Amino acid sequence: MTHPTSADVVIIGSGHNGLVSGILLARAGLRVVMLEASSVIGGATRTEHPFAKVPGLQQSTGSYLLGLMPPELMRTLDIDIPVLRRDPHYFLPTPGSAYLLSGSTRTDNGIYSEADLRADALMQAELAALREDLAPAWLAEPGTVEETAAQYIRPSLQDTFISLVRGSVLDYLKKFDFESELLLSMYAVTDGLSGINAGPDDAGTGHNFLVHNMCRLPGADGTWMIARGGMGTVSRMFSEAFVAAGGQIFTSSRVASVLSSAGAVTGVALESGHVVSSPVVLGACDPYELMKIAPVPDSLQERMKAHQRTGTTMKVNLALSGLPKFSCLPAGAPSPFGSTIHLLPGSDGDQPLARLRRMWEQVQSGQLPDEPTIEWYLHTTVDPSLMDDEGHHSSALFVQSVPYGAAVDDAYVDHLLSICDSYAPGTSALVADTFTLSPSGIESHFGITGGHIHHVDNTVALASRMPYATGFPGLYAGSAGCHPAGSVIGAAGHNAANRILADLGK
View (cartoon, rainbow, N blue to C red):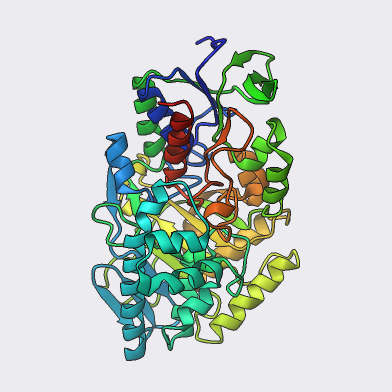
């Protein structure tokens, strides 16, 4: 298919937000052209075959769960993504006999006290109320933290909301008087620190915690879901809807520059030299890539560069020949697979929070941490469609935190697998192949500046994130770096499209 010479809107990037924008703009009757630098669509929302030694096994190599996409958006798009509920959804093992399996029912051996049960119930009730109140704000232009509180949050929770968004995750968790430091650490890590360049005491980690508790998909009950067929299902269904609405997608089409004349956008030039004329360009790439190629106003560039951080997340994709066996689980215990398996510093009961803080100190000094936090998952037990004919399982270690630029070699991957062995002896022997993406690997594989999976750190909230309208006529942004946050949400694509349609008088 030959690139066109003109369009009503050009979208740079085919991640899920760009696809959402494309669907809405094409359905509004606009000629929309989407240009993707990679040879495949989807950004980090992909299902791939990454294992050279196990070529038939599928894996969600980047994003791996669907939780935060608003159900209202899915109804607007008229797309029903097939999802599978994880039950249990949390598994907290220890090297001893204690463990926690939490889902529709809770199986607990020595993790919770009576005080922890009360604290957890209070926290979950408060988060449910905040989730309900904040939901409409995700599909609207953002205000400041205080403006958002006044407009959306019930009066009794407005101060709580402001403190949570501006504060640290540990400050928020401690107000509920949990007794178990390990439980505190689990909640802090999985929701407060996931994907960001920050430690548990840092301001803004409370916002990331709130974001990760915004799961509202039907049947989710506040947790994250598995997309059947991997996360590439999301990109495939969105791209099919975009093309059905008349949109055009071109892969291997890197945009070299956004063109302008007389102070307004006039189109884009590809690296090949081909020019697509258009009065509107939407950057669905990360904001820092957009700043390299487009006339983003200096004031906005300065503001966003002040927020710029590199990624600290590493993904060790694993092909397994069998299922691990956790030594803490007794015979007859519910299966832990499908859940997020939390391997935490201090899971042996020795100073979990102090060791979590030490991990972050090592990362800040540029070291690979001795005891990183690991979220381990294995989705082929819930979605066997990912398996190959030989019955291999796709699994992964989502490692937080790893400093950008640190030399991650096979020895460090072996170290991580030895940590797995301490909970599930013999796991290393099950590994048939690996596909490791350090922060710099994420940068090169998915084309995300600095390897930061959220584009803009989720410690940055609401109107402080990249705006949809850049201030340069005809130039817009709509990616994970915009409101509401980084993750597979799609709201930024929805909101950017609505802003473009409003500015065009449609």
